[in-house]
Image 1 (cartoon, rainbow, N blue to C red):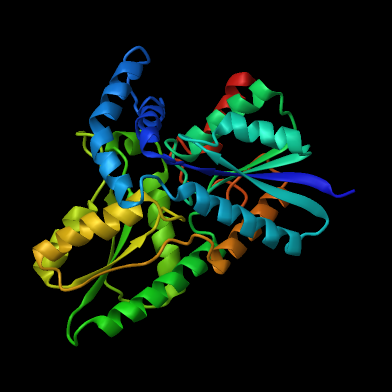
Image 2: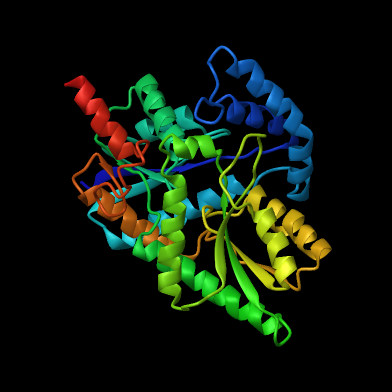
Amino acid sequence: MARRVAVVLFNLGGPDAPESVRPFLVNLFTDPAILRVPGFIRPWLGRLIAWRRTAPAMENYAVLGGKSPLLELTEEQARALDAALAERDPSAEYRSFVCMRYWHPMSEAAARAVKEWGAEEVLLVPLYPQYSTTTTGSSIAAWEEAARRVGLAVPTTTLCCFHSDPGFAEATARLLREALAKARAELPAGVGLRVLFSAHGLPESIVKAGDPYQWQVEQTVAAVLEKLGEPGLDSVVCYQSRVTPQKWIGPSTEEEIERAAHDKVAILVCPIAFVSEHSETLVELDVEYREEAEKLGVPGYFRVPAQNSDPGFIASLADLVLRARRSGRALCSFAGARQCPKAHGDCPHARARAEARQAA
């Protein structure tokens, strides 16, 4: 009988109705991986931040019909991945389970579903290409706690990142190549085009503490540009979605839009840390930043679509799953061993090694 292998797909989640916006934000801003303040302060401060951000968030989700499309898109990715895995490896029975961090289905529901299905093996797969303690790290911690609560104890492999996996880079480069051709065809002769590789930002303090996210984003961009094969392409890495007053990593996407206006070049925004459309792409990039670019006189504004269920991306994801399963490692990167330089002490491989030393 084929071995049952559960593939747990981690993603952020999003509200499924207007009344879900506030509790979704409370879950987000009371996560210790997100709001790094003393524990006795976090519950009330997180709720205060959620309360202050509810109205603008509801406006954003109203543009999307009152809810996030992320769950449906992730479920489509799960179905496509299952089909690809069934074709690639008929020796096992694979089933993908969606596990959202801040709204349903969350970790405990996903863990119960995996247990009820009778999984004999689990693969934890983030839909965040780059590892951060605020995304994949938080999801892994929540999953481990939920698995203990529901009594799910089966061999588990965790894929921490796939930032410069060749298959992922090629799939992304193809989407970028198509968007570049379309944008260039629409621009008047003589108007330059700059690619903004836009990723969700992080407070600078988190990166300085050892989070490898920014380094991994830069590795993703380098890998995509190599696959694209356009030496000398005008491009820049930038960061969006700042939500707190502290200093965040930069340059910001807003700053790069202003620079493009000053340089009188059109821009093509490529979301480089998201593999599904959601509010940060459909509202922040497509509405807010487009309006800002038009107001500043940027001569053209275009965007590369997120991967969603693009066949090339799904094929790369299936390959990642199979390599992780065959790696023989409980924790692996897309290339097997640790990829992050030693300076990034919050790399999960570094943390695992430190915990092993302490246990010894």
